[in-house]
Image (cartoon, rainbow, N blue to C red; front, side):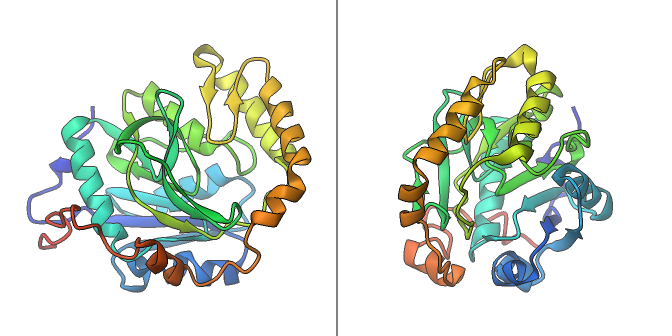
Length: 283
């Protein structure tokens, strides 16, 4: 295995990088670009515009930035004040449990098939705060935020089409290479838009993963089950069509200030029990 996060020389914080695929500058400026981690210059940033697949955008980020820990985030995600402290504390805890970890996320599905993590979703119109012990080993991750330890050499599959299910794919890539995947307690604000249906891009990504990971199916993704038959894809599309009006009524059209949402939820600063010792070490 390659050197662990803990192998970074003592007295120096691991360098952080943030990568995003961008197609809406206004959304970016009000959310991810407004995150204190970036406005205060504590992480390098690389935005990719015009990408035809998320894997190509994210691999470009891996090739461009020099960082031990890379954060891949949606442009509509806001990382609240204290996110860096929480992240470093979560990595330190995961290091103790799994020195060979490869990827982690803020929301996903654990090995028992239960959703876990914390996030605000304007698309759902509510906060998701699931009562699960974290960190937890993951079988899949939601794509809103994915963290990769670059020393592992883990990369996104350039053959994966479109912009879906790469959170499930990257977990399986890491695990196949012998690295662990985790969900950590890192609450973020996701000012997402209402999703009426999965669409053909999602179906294409689903079929790609069906073929690629057939030997380890079924896998529960944050959205649906990935199975050899693919029947859950059609069930999910039908369920989304049937519940469209109800879901639309609960979504938030005026997404609001993500900082104010984080303050209201109590996510704008590290919790009292999050130890900031790693974050406060000298650079």
